[in-house]
Length: 264
Image (cartoon, rainbow, N blue to C red; front, side, top):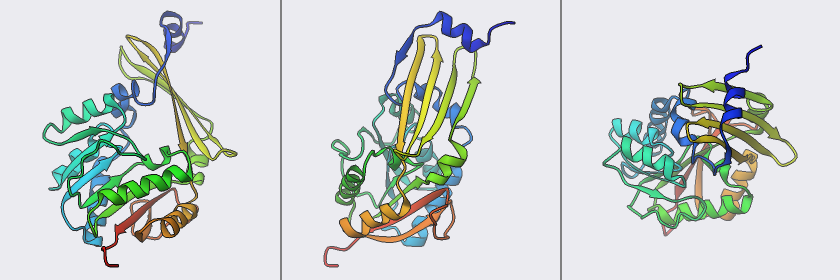
């Protein structure tokens, strides 16, 4: 019996550890081609219109390869981005050459320059990369500082139910082209409330291993942190690209927060 292409590559190339997204960036848009960024842009636009965003300038935290920035730009908005991965930002800048990008990460956001952004977004469960309630609170407080009065913060997180149903003990393999392939092994660690995605990425330069860990917070815990420990006004928590209220078993919750006026 002949060996699989993955087994053949394992025997020829050296394995190396890589930080999240350093190597995944090369194939990220192919791996995530199921994501409808145009739908994301239309939904965020609808949220901004519904809530009366005080402007059209957006900062997208964890912007990745800039697909959302590109799509929201097609709808008439000016969006900049920040991300902790130089590899991802390189692709984002190439796709959006006129926009501003910063190498930066939550919760600190040290280098991102305030530009009077009317809306700050943090999409596609980027907030789940914050590893504790304290770092989540720190991130919320930092975003609050960057927003103008009445500015909106729109972010989303996924639920434990979503991870358990769709990403627990799931393996995926794909040969993308003659040069690149990957294996993704996913599982949900219930005791730690963590979603783990282990990538093995096959490239001409070698085999790279990336471990991505996302902390899964109950929606109620996030709501409590916002209402009890921040100055944000929590406008609503929507379910999965709708304007229905999210429940504990919703796959994804979109949190809509507003920075209160100074005299509120």
